[in-house]
Amino acid sequence: MPRVEPRGRAGAPALSFFLLLLLLAAVPSEAADTVAVDVGAVYASNEGTSIDPALGTIREKLQSMFNYSSYRMLDRKRRSLSVGETGEFELPDRRTLQATPLPARGNKVRLSIRISEGPRNLLTTTLGLRRGGMVLVGGPSHKAGVLILLISAE
Amino acid sequence: MDCGTALGKINAKADGHLPREEEAALAGHLAGCSACAAEDAAISAAGPVLRALTGIRAMEKAPALDAMWTRVRAGIEESRETRRRSAWIARWAWIPAIAALAVLALLFYPAGTDRSPFHPSSFDVAVENVESDVATVALVDKGEDLPRVIWIIEDAKS
Figure 1 (cartoon, rainbow over the protein chains, first blue to last red):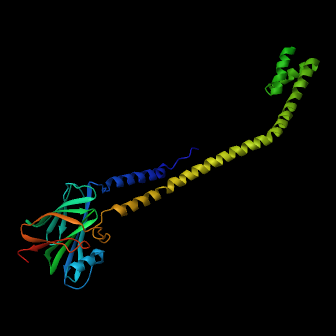
Figure 2: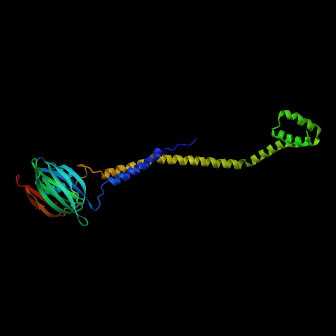
Figure 3: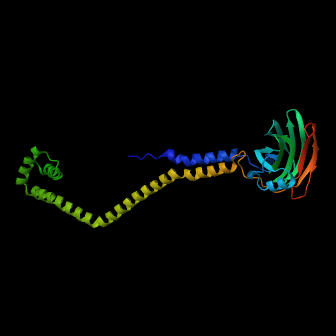
């Protein structure tokens, strides 16, 4: 009597491999022409003395630079952007940050940053930094303190 | 019945093909013909001799036949084992593939606020231009070990 081969099970590895290929194709590759922009919104105030552990090594820097007693991460977003592509990051109090990678050479990253509050343009700047570097943008008021934005690019 | 016909019937009888109704006619001819009777006796004796010879040959070949059967049985077992092994691989091979998918998903899936803490590698930042429509902007630089700060002083509120 001919034996029926379990073809359904034999197809599972092939299906998994196909899914793996799909995932690899879907994952945004951070190639040289792509910049991963990371924006963290920190609420700095004198309400309490807590320091958010999510701030990592940057918390000591914040404490040494500013006179606030409390630093709390409100939000953090990361976008992989191609050169010329604009990514929008929502900030507290209906503010938005738009980041656009510009052409750069070597290990450098150039970012055009625009922070707006409704129709008001709070800040427009162009930054040049190394991959993995960080710059802070602070000052916009929030509750009883201020917002400090941690902007890094890889 | 002549001797030629009788010889054909002797052979048919040795093969077991002679009809019963013809056996009496053949026996009558054999009773009267010694040559055909001798032929009948010789052919009738050949059957047991041939059977004995075949038995002897079979006994002689038995070890070789046993060895051949052993080889055939081993081949069948090996084929079954190969099929079992490939079925086992087909059944479990998807597990490492799924594990690899899970690891990749964990590594690359874009997460929100629960990612690793900030560990910037550099604070070397060049500010090419700064402007604001509604605020005064100050650049604060407190040294190489500290991040460069762009401070927005909102005119209406500050």
